[in-house]
Length: 95
Figure 1 (cartoon, helix red, strand yellow):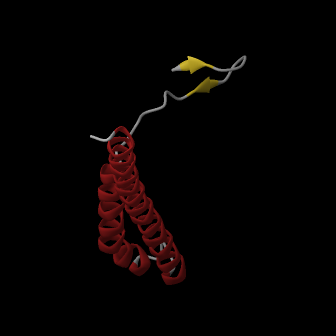
Figure 2 (cartoon, helix red, strand yellow; figure 1 turned 45 degrees about the vertical axis):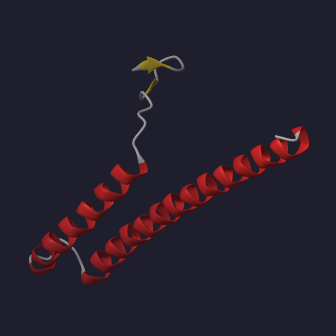
């Protein structure tokens, strides 16, 4: 950890692959679906709160999946553009 300002400590930034993040969210959703019924029965959690929490995690999963898809699309476009640039270069140079 590093000291950012007097008395505060900033956490070290850790890079986590998007696939790892998606898998973690899937596990969290499964865990909540397993545990929440007992918590609701024991009145530790209301049905509404359980539904809201699971919906929020499902939204996180959808967002991460969308980000992953957009990254794949961006990479594919970059590859296509690189190919077009190479084809144009060869055409201009007469190769």
